[in-house]
Every structure is written in structure tokens, then in C-alpha cells.
Length: 310
Image 1 (cartoon, rainbow, N blue to C red):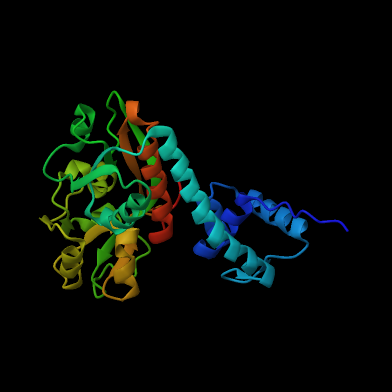
Image 2 (tube, rainbow, N blue to C red; image 1 turned 90 degrees about the vertical axis):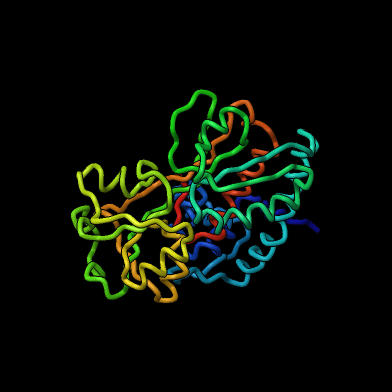
């Protein structure tokens, strides 16, 4: 009697989980940093090894076969355990305690930061954590001085001794009232905003992508600028036709789904930004910091809509 070894590997399980979460092969390939052809080749390799198809071709979203569902069930069981073991080994290698003081430069980051911290604390309970918004002080110089340990930023200013680790790319969209005259346009040109009240977070305009990457290059200014600290308040103002606001796609997803506001792309190709984790070079290999960045990146792709890997 012979026993057949199917040769299952973790990469296959990660691929199936990504396809299930993303709902498409294209998005799964982006998340896994693979080309579409490489992902297709990996799926064919898996199906050849097990002698069965794992999902029904040409179904949208991909519909898993019985074999695919079995493997997906295995992925849901094995991958969290694999990650937990990795975290345990990192703790053994680098010690369980440390300090992780974080500042964030965008209020909408709370949407994924809080789940990240919750998951992280399960594995690094001894790490002293603290975080704050970075609206009332300059966080990057504070990071350089050692007052902070990590800054979440979309503005990677070159500073000696600071490394910027990309988390994901995202598109900024213009939130407008559903009855706004701009609703229905294919995209927004800078000149479309010259008569608009632009609602922003209370930060310097030089740190806002809608200004330094969209309006300023076209030498356009909005009619007025109004600030609000909470995303919910900003969108309430937008919905009541008191202004428009440029916000990350993930921050708008819930409100668009509920039909409370509308959104239009900024520019023909869209206004894209990258979110980074800024850390001191000397701490780059600290296990508890590397683990937080890994958890943050994974949580982002599980919780945020329409983001892309860098």
C-alpha cells in the first residue's frame, strides 16, 4: 500500500485565502505581489498536485469547488496558527518587552489601526503601547529624537536615520453631496474646485495631497477652506451641501454603500497616495516593531476597501 503526498504548501493556502477575501484573481494577485500569470500558474500547479479543480472558472466572484472549500477551511485554521507561532519565535528571539509609541497623521487611520492594535496585543502583551494623533506637533522630528517609535504618514520627508516602510497605496476621492452638480462627472479637474468650499482635517495644507499633488500644481485655490476633526462630521457637512472633501477611498466606503454621499475621481488617472510606517533605522530589526508593521499591513488588506499593495 502506498501513501500519496499531495505536496501542499503554505503559499497555496495564502493564495486561496486572498482570492476568497478579494473576490477576484486580479485583486488577489495584487495583494500577494504576484503577476496574474504567476498566480494562475500557481493555481494550475496546485490543481495538478491534488488532481482536482479548486474553483469554477469564469465565475465572478470565484466560486470554490468542494476541494477548494476544503483547502480554504484548512487555510482558515492553519494560517492563524502559523502566524501565532512566528510571533512566538520572534518574542523568544528578541525579548517580549519594549516600547511602541505611535503617532498617526490621518484620523481615518483609526479604522484599521484599532483592529491592528487589538490583534497585536494578543501576541505582544508586554510591549508598552501608546498612540496619539499628530495634529498638534511635528511627529517625524519627535521620532528622530526618540520621543516616538513609529509614525504612520503619507508624507515621507527625508530625514537621516528614518526609514519609511510602505504599507499600501490608496486613492483619494472627492466626496460630494448626491445632488451636487459635479456628481456624474467622469473625473474632477482642479479648476472644478475654484468655487467650492473644501473641507479638510485641521492640518497644514502642505501636508494634504489634494493641495500639494492636485490643486497647487495647477495654481488653483478653492473658494474657501473649512476644517473638521472627525470624518463623520466632514461627511455630514458634505451631505448637507456645505462643501466638498477629498478623503481616502476606504474612509468613504461605508457612506457610499449607504448612499449618504457620492464620490468622484480626482483627475483623469486618479489621485493616489502611499501610506508609510516611519521608524528609526536602528529599530528596523526589532522583532516587536517588525511584527507590528506586518500585522498592520495584513489588517489593512482585511479591513479596508479598494487599497492596493505598493
